[in-house]
Image (cartoon, rainbow, N blue to C red; front, side, top):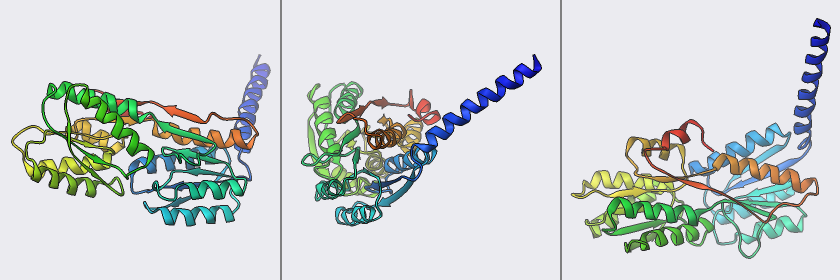
Length: 311
């Protein structure tokens, strides 16, 4: 019996080793270029971490470049990745301007393109992996309706104009608030979806109209900056501040009450999905044109579960 158990254990270990080696061999000798819009944003950093960790597990070499929010920089970076003969490109456009140029350049070099979070309408990649912003922001808008009983004034601090998330979140938040008759009285756009921009814009908005009671930040960074502006302004009325993405910093802020709500995206999952898409395409398999993921409205009641295990 002892000899039989030893043989069985060796067999199981061999199977596990073969499976592990097989997964690593999928990417052995292959290189993925990861072009990120702006690594100052925690959301993009989380995607980067996921792609790099999962890609390494699969045996890929990951070459990451950060456009720091500049479309021209990103075009040059992706041209360099193409010159390095990457086998695939995971692409998060830095903006709407010139976003199609890298896709066309990669296609000309016969390099597959996987778009994450942001797509290029005129020249989409081989697949698009994204959070369903319209549905989630509509639900957030309706949640704000419930909290305010449908009364008050809302302002929206947008992300970078014309990008996929900016367009979709504008549509969703507007629809959610319209369901109870709340109108957006001020709009302003950011360039970097950043906290300092959210802070400055929110300060200006509150100075123009101290009766504002809802501030929508189209990303958590923007919303966190706006929340600090509200704290400094010390308004007489309650001002509800919400964001989007479910960044770790924002989840902690929701849990503590600094931020009222956000929507948690499947950020790490999207990174792994992008690597899996690369593996499938390089193996000659077809992939869906669209690969949507859910985003969950997150308040103080459920923020803890996402801090414990972020999807």
